[in-house]
Image (cartoon, rainbow, N blue to C red):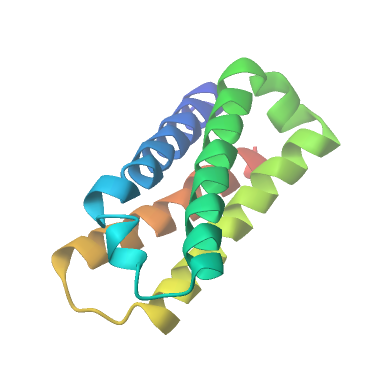
Length: 125
């Protein structure tokens, strides 16, 4: 698979997770479902989620707009490695804290593992 195709898949993966995170308000009935926690925790969860969605958009844009820089420069390769590590950590966190035997949880775990592969593969070329 070409590096250009891999970076396109990295971008699509990132944009997909950005959209998924932006849907959390609807999917999880935020902020109503968060009302049993403290006001600071309610704010932190929503702010962190919004910022994470932005990171996914920024990474996706970098993969689309700067493919050569992403694979041929130190900063670009660091972003790819950082995202591969991000998804690896997310896989481990999923296993540690979200022990739910449900097909949707398993699908998310597979998508996290896919992120590890997608972001690591351009580094091998």
